[in-house]
Image 1: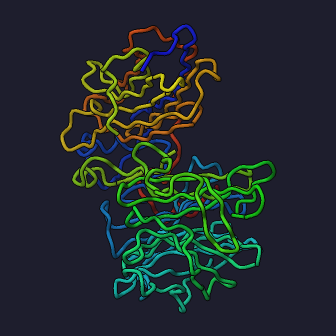
Image 2: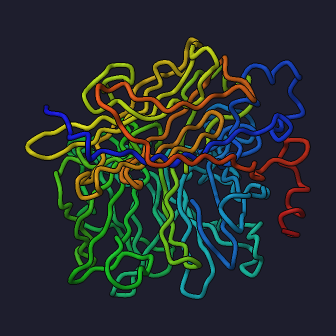
Length: 507
């Protein structure tokens, strides 16, 4: 492929770089001091959401507070089947979070083996309701409902699970362990609520099923699935929402002339999140994608290390917010040493060291002084069929000298017309210890990666701009900021404690 005319090529970098002092990184007080050198403090994020300790994996906005309910293992850093609970944190800005007691814990026959993923819905009267997957005493995945004990409590601390659960038992044509992840409910034009539930139908494939109800108690399955993925096995965490069209985003799916929607699914086969724009028919409760029918060829939400994303509508700012889960990519033994696992997020392409005509050019972040370790975030520009193609990559192959760390190269084509943008490509990279998030072309492509360097210590992390191409590339602007450390579920002793409830109330 021919190269781009370099006379018109400029690169604009916008970098947000975090370098926190060791004092701002608080470790669990029940761990010996020696553990802090094994990566626990150095790799714990400073402004990405995660619980104070142990393992985690639906958000909502209610009465002036953001609530984040998340899958949480209170007893360890590994998956933990029978004790999986719903952790609960609140925030006023989606940055600083205060931990509350667990909202849901296994306590009844219908969730005896764990309270798994689900979603929250705000009813017309302003009160919330939660639908979640419980694994019952027999091992069946069933759908349950929970209500706040006191709907006027702004913190929504206490939740009640009615005795009549489950409200949706596992269907006969679905395996007992392939039925989960109820979505946020939406109200159809007929005044009936709908939810989407992920399933794998016998001998058919991954499916997003639709259930209808007038009262959140009695649910009826739609004859046709919302979407059937023949090429995929199990799909998870379905999400359906309207895309921005002229007018006001209402936050709930609606059909009609000019209405378009996004369907997002998490595919277990590839451990990736995919989305497509299409048409939703709320009379038939079916979805027709505008692109290829195979969900694995849809666009990915993030071309890096993100899975099980979930969106919610934020009425305070009239926007839809989507969060994904960036789990660890080193070993379980490393998780045990750190005492925690997983944070929430904000391909075999050529590496950064192989020269081309235009590129690779970009940034080296989390670089050690001797360059033994570094993470490359870069672009390559090609010309194909009289159009310029922009490839964005994050190369982890030299991010760590440690063994047992997943260090792949990630890549994605940026959906942009570089000529229409004056030959300028923007890159915004956020570095948060073990998390490197990069947004190319104004957010048209996103790559999230987890890095675990051994030689980069506090105060010794370097940032470089590089160009390994044969032609010159102009850096039109470069901005770097040091990010403050957010308050994220960490008290002075590093633990989630009962006192965090009173602290959140005062906040």
